[in-house]
Amino acid sequence: MSTAAPNQPGAGEPVSSSGRLGPSAAGPDGLSLRRTRPEDEGFCRALFVACRQGELAATGLGAEQCRELLRQQFDLRSAAYRAQFPGASDWVVHEAGGPPIGRLVVAHQDEALVVVDVALLAHVRGAGRGSALLTWITAWADQEGLAVRLEVEAQNPARRLYARFGFECTRGERADEAYLSMVRPARATGAQEFDRFRLEVLADARMAEGLRHAAGPEALVARTAELGQARGYRFTRDDVSAALSDSRRTWFERWVG
Image (cartoon, rainbow, N blue to C red):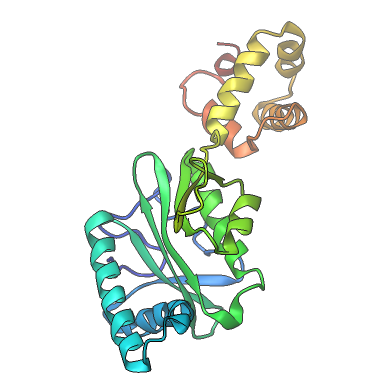
């Protein structure tokens, strides 16, 4: 996995069209992300054990057997990640100024962001950290017009959180399935939303006339963004400005042409 500096793209990293890794260089709200380094293996291994040891409690295995089994599972899973998602971004999750509290692994594959792994220590769950990570990931996906895919254990309570963020099972659930595949469909980017709005305006003489009387480029951008949002489009002033700057014609000609 990459060992680039925090929030800077490294070789093979999925980056946005703007050149940034994810939607915000500051990371998820209230959290910071740092690329994993070789010295983080101990924490990542301990986190895996903490998240999995409850599953083995009812098997009747001795403590040493459980430790050995979890060690093997961690090694096998790490190898599988490297083979299946060679360009994945692998982060250690921190609260501001604090010790690590979790791990996040995300890959860009087949027009989607794949949440390869997300895990938090037990004592920080249920306090909004998972929601902060998902908010950041889905904002990144929306910025790029990508779907988000993940797999979750069928009995994992996190399924309810994923559902609140718009994830759906990709097929009907079967009682014998241990894991479920879930997807959050791609949303239109701001630029795509603006293009749809522009076509609507060009087909509506009254709307077009109202925008033609804007008193300059800044007023046009502001009026366009307000009108689009009032009609349910999801684009910003920055999206409008970027679209208008894509041509060498005057701002008025860019709009009506």
